[in-house]
Image 1 (cartoon, one colour):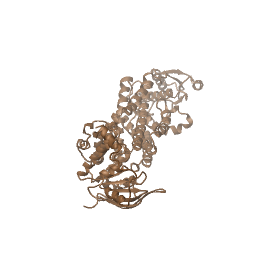
Image 2 (tube, rainbow over the protein chains, first blue to last red):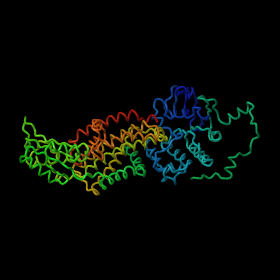
Image 3 (tube, rainbow over the protein chains, first blue to last red):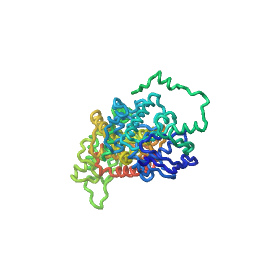
Image 4 (cartoon, rainbow over the protein chains, first blue to last red):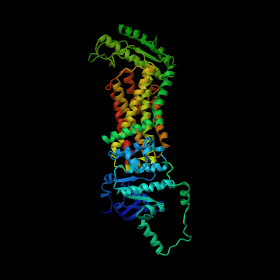
Length: 252
Length: 364
């Protein structure tokens, strides 16, 4: 199968700052692909260009078989999007929020089925703004799935969530992948990338500095003679936290 | 069309759930109406009107006796010189000078039309407006009664019986106008700047929604709300204050919707310009407050200082209030208020251009 995202020599500059400095990569159909990097590395700019929300200065990008620069509207039809720091229209219930986005795509969907998929069915009649952070991220997934997208773009999906909610969201993302949707996510949680992603690209100062499966990146580092200065812990604080508080979602 | 309808249905549902927005679009206008109307803050008692009858013929006597029959008027007969002095001392509200050639007869080509001269006291604009309106209507009735044809002075509505214009009758169209302005400017500006700031518009722009449809949904939602608001206000005015609405409700609604569209364009322009919700009230007040006072809401628009009247007469709300009031109080038709409608249309075009320049969904 051809790659579902194909990026060639992408460049974007904001005034003096070169946010993206000629990057190229591919995302294979059906994989979970992670774009990692510190804040300001150019992750969000890259994703928003691929989503047809920003114009690039140079290069090319084909997403789900569509040239993003030539037809951003068609790209939007074929992808699902979860933006960083976005919100939904106020005073709508969870179900109405899904219906609102279905109307934006001019599609008829079974809003309740989508909510069931993200384990929010029993919150269908609740006002969107009264949902917890984790619930809202799950609602956000539901709205990103209204058009049965070929690629799902998730920009820092678990930022600000508690450990239980993060794990729950990982399960949902794996479930979405298992139904054949390619997932493109950005994160700066490396454990998340290690657990979820088949391949990761690490971005720094507008460039991709590494692109491989997480295991290979780690093996390569070790092969270069790297070793952690401390003994490997057999458990960390998060393990303690989850042992004490359980894996059960708190706000579901 | 279908997309617009679906989005409108959802936006409308969200709007009706927003208690604060509903409060401002219904309770505040009702409060204004009750305070000014029920407590009769604007009550000015009677209009003291002096008549200088220089004609002393049958026609002028007939006019005088008709005027004397109107309880709102307190009539005295005196010379122009004397009355002008008293006018300047604010002891009188209005002076009517009946010219020597006064007659009620169909106009003949080439003949000059007898002119009533009406002096009004600048300091008491409400009384002057009421006085002028009463005189105009009495003239109309009189000329119709005598000539049985369209009279010299254009007859606005021949069916008017007994002029009993009270302050609430004057007030209600003004309240309608000002609330159309407030609702359209504030509701759009607050909602959309909030959506912009919180990233709602950005999220929506990540879908392939057709922007004109989304825009139309926002506009139609507010048109529905405005129509509901107008209906409730009119109902309360009719039931509680027994307000007389002389003109057609249809014409009133058409003008109200035109006014809503006009102020919506201003709301969109403001929403495009403002970067945060904090900027909205300041700018919105700057736009609406002068119109609140100078466009004839609670008092005649002539309460504005004469020096700035050429400007205040061109304010959007002035056109809206004038049209609403002429329809409601004088029974004017849409054709009669075509000047005001033209003014509204010009403002709609200006507002639309401004909104398109300042508000771009694509940018979010």
